Each structure stands twice: as structure tokens, then as C-alpha cells.
Image (tube, rainbow, N blue to C red):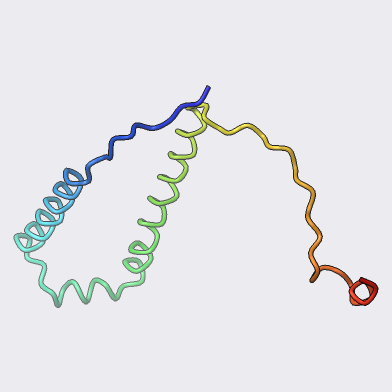
Length: 102
């Protein structure tokens, strides 16, 4: 049985509004705690911070990818296996001797 998604377009406005609100709260929190640009620059030069800045988004990306694969598989909407197609010979795949004979 074919399952299709809804034809309605999903709105991104609510997600964007929450993201902007969260970023604003994070900046305001940093200002109230007393983090100055000089302190932030000094903190960013530490190797542990540089590794965390690289690894945290990468780890989140991999986890989201695994979640999406599992969600897709659990839905049972995997396509049926198609029969293997025989490779089509091309001119550039032939040897030079075959090209002379043709």
C-alpha cells in the first residue's frame, strides 16, 4: 500500500521564532553573567573548547540522522527491491581493438 505525505506545506515560522528567542536569551544570559568579548576570545583559544565546538554539532547531526533512519524504517515505507539491471556497455569502456573493428 502506498503511503504519501500530506500535501500541506509545513510552516517554519514557529521554529524560527523559537530559535530567535533562544538565541536572544543566550546572548542576554551571557551579558548578565559578565562574559566580555575578551574573556570569550581567551576561552575560544583553549583546545578543549575548539574540540567541543566541532564535536557537539557533529554528534547532534549523527544522532538526528540515526533517528530519521529509524523513524523511516519503523514506518514500514521502505521501497520494494528492484531487480538488478545489467550494466549497459558504453563506447569508452571498450578496448581500442574493439573500436577499430566496429
